[in-house]
Length: 633
Image (cartoon, rainbow, N blue to C red; front, side):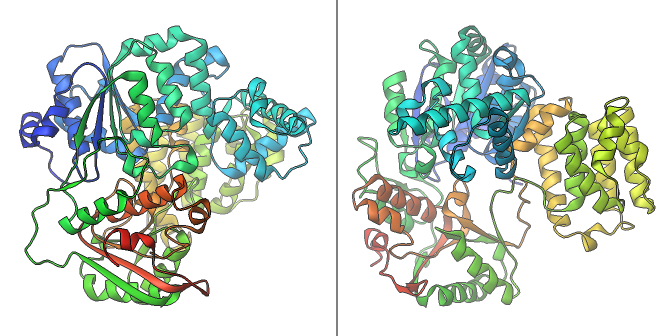
């Protein structure tokens, strides 16, 4: 791990403009920070300086970003700089902060502290189906098509009572309004939230009870928002409901050249909205210390073709010291996507066989990455496609997670059924969930206690697992000790789970990182319901092991940097996509595709390899227009 200097060392190591940003105190500030410009160093240095300037202060700092990984990194850096003050900072995602708000005050709008979060599509579809059945509503549309509409309404902060304006067909609007109302009522009856409801309900809380928002404003004297350009309408409105018209201590870091979540409501115009609402000072950090000079010039040439940019924005400047005459950018041509995948794998093997973990392969679509992964495997090179995973893949960790879920909600039949099913597979039993529920309901009502009374496995490790659950969850309710003891048992050679359970090793690495990071955010004394809420917000994807080549979509590459980058599929209809071409050369969709390319090429620190093929899916494709705009064609 890179050594972090103390606060004074860090401040003196910053450039003049970085120091100017880190020294900002009161009032609104918009920092336009290009890729590789050192924004994380600035943010952490500023937070540390504010804490040190008032060590006895009772106020806190709110630091919001878009990924839990970025929030965890920021918290870790601040903890190294000012360890005594880190408890005065909340560093997390928008959804994590909204959950914290709802835990503390959500009862005012019917959200109780121990609410459950449903994030998987399967869980949400089941909830919707039950809600519509209970309300006797037939939408006459596949439920898979209903959720994008309901989610879109909540992203626009439209309630069931005022959503008809979004429908051109009044009858259809009435049906959806009724379905929307039924679904939200069902969530409340279950004391549950799905992912889009988190921001929506927190916004409702702040707007319906402004005194609560005022209390949070007094608690958090300073607020930092990273990757601000990615905020959608609901997230920005949530921030506005928190700050009101008086609170101005917002420090936002943004880059309108990196807006790549337009499908989720992000827009370059959000920066203009912030300027209109908060009248901030504006500071630019255009120097890129990450990429070779050639890549910086390519990025400038590319993005200069976009019109939706902040007026007066400076081009990127190259700040990296380079080896003279080093080859930094290459372009490779192939006949088809299959020969492209094989050629990229062979090229990586030849050039980076001793440092494959320093290389990343980026593509517009996962399909291209899957082909490359197969070709790398044939050459004996391990590669992993980075993608969000909403649940654990192995039975042992499904059962561990299920144990915690049932311990938290001991009369939840659906959670209990999944727990019993995974327990039967892992522990070699054949218990019936319905029979156990009947036993529990005839007496104490505790499903978990009923399971323990009937669980009698034969194998020694399974017997030990049941005993750990009985002692730590049923009798003591010490979930942290349960987790420690059970994961230690999982790792014992006697059980040999790594050899017998697919995906066990991946889940083992994922759980270790998740447990540590969540404990760091919510505190090691946080109750089980808080831990599980945070767990549901996070991907269960395992961290990539050393020496493994990460394969990323452009969206997945955001916020990362790699020594060597391959960007593949630079062909018309691929990057830019067919949909953006159909929308038009000057359309917002085409500008977003250009920003996608901008983000991808600026992930590299030493070399960039671009590639394209003459045919994809059997159809001839021209080289991407972006190659010409970057000066590569």
